[in-house]
Amino acid sequence: MGHLARLTAMARRSGSGVRPQFLSMSRAVPVVEAEGFRWEYVPSRDDLGIGPRRWNRQFERRLTRVLLRDRPAAVVFDGTFPYDGLLGAIAAARAAGVDVRSVWSRRGMWRPGGDGGQLARSGRFDLVVAPGELAESADRGATAGRTDAVDVGPITLLDADELLPRAEAAAALGVEPDRPTALLTLGAGNVRDLTSDRQRFLDRLLAVPDLQVVVTHALIADQADELGGRVTATSVFPISRYFRALDFAVAAAGYNSFHELVGFGVPTAFVPNPSMPLDDQPARARWAADAGAALCLEEVTPDAVDEAVTLLADLDGRAALAARCREVARPNGARDAMAAVEDVVAGVGLVEV
Amino acid sequence: MPAAGDTTRGRATPRLGPGPARRAPGSGGSLAVRLRRLAGDTVGWAFETLGGPPPGLVPGGGTANDDRPVVVVLLFGATADVVATTAGVLAGRLAAGGPRAVLVLDGPHFAAARRAGVVVDHVISRADWAARGYAEWDTYLAGEVDRLRRDLRTRHVVTLPPEGTDGMGAAELRELLTPPGRRPNPLTRLWWRAVVRVERRVDRTSGAKS
Image (tube, each protein chain N blue to C red):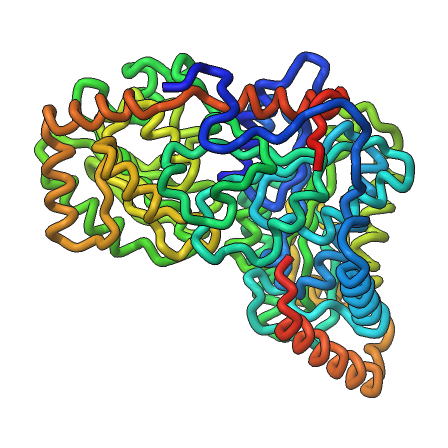
């Protein structure tokens, strides 16, 4: 859901004359309705299970119809590979007289060697916006060092002043505010089997006296687990709104969760998923550990889990991590990203290719 | 720590300036790139035009049932439970040798259908369409159904009530989902299968990623 969260973050900071609407291949796209945005779902190639040629042709026709119908001032694409169908639809809409600008929100931290030719498509956008990375000094991917994008700060859906107070957040999550609480969120489970990792953490977390554990059921996960006792399952979105109910977290190191947890000062043990093709989670998590702002568990062994939970269960250990988080945090870049898009629409922010 | 609004950290900021869009997406690239794109488009057109229903239509790209007819099932105004139940029934029909159903929803319960292993698509609901200030939802829907028929190479469209398949007997369901008329003749089906084989091979070997 990373792309959806980043685009929603931008959309909710748009100017008063802008009316954002969403067209997404994420089955979680209806969540944007809570922000007052209209949405449409388009099945991805994977969801349809059909080949790329057919899918791109179908997608191009479909998106072209949408563009001709809604005549948007800009299309903002967030992803790591601008589809042929996307580019074709924008070209077709322009040929039909729609004055639409194109923007690529191009997150960095690709795994080394991850460029399959898509970076060459950057020049076919009016603007490339690069959502910031706290760990950019560790970025060894194909986008590192490129000068063709407008760089903004790390994009998070919420700002710190939008987080609920502890008591309110705890009530929403169904936990007691005066007891210690940990968040366990290892991703949607769609990329690798996380069951054993999650169970290992759960067992160790529940060995901490009085600790409550909140486990996310990601909205796009295809399975739900049976949980009970001191464990609460939640599918609230965005979970960051409830961070003040948490004392620490164990989380995957995807863009959104990483920047929200570090940005909002939640002591965290990151468990990077090494199999994300264009998201170098291990490098991101290692950077945070090297900076003293988080823990990084590349291998979920019993010893590593025990060591991490022991540190996180300790008040002083958590305080040290939270203090470093505050030092490395950067302001939310969503407003700047949206401003860049609006400048392009206004004709004052076009990138000289 | 950089100040709020700092947009230049780490990398150089590209030059910004007024002016029209410089290049239309899709029109860029060298002659070789454009020729490659044209060739790809031609191949895609050939598969769509010469072949039958797209191979696959199994979430996640599992084994295709290439000889099965495709049926578009419209289910509007359904709850998550109804979507889950109906998708389960449609998946069961497929497993029992029935058609490949594409479930079209006007609401948000896509994950429920996907969990059942059924392909799901979306149209804007009548209420949302009106709220957007558009007129003639029926015309929009007709256009979307035409799109689905074309993309999926089928003429069989079924509309379920908001209760889905609830209360339908097996015989009624079978009759509803079975396309009217005769199945394509064996030669046509043989041809479609051959096209599918070529399409899959080309998709595999051409490095098409997007």
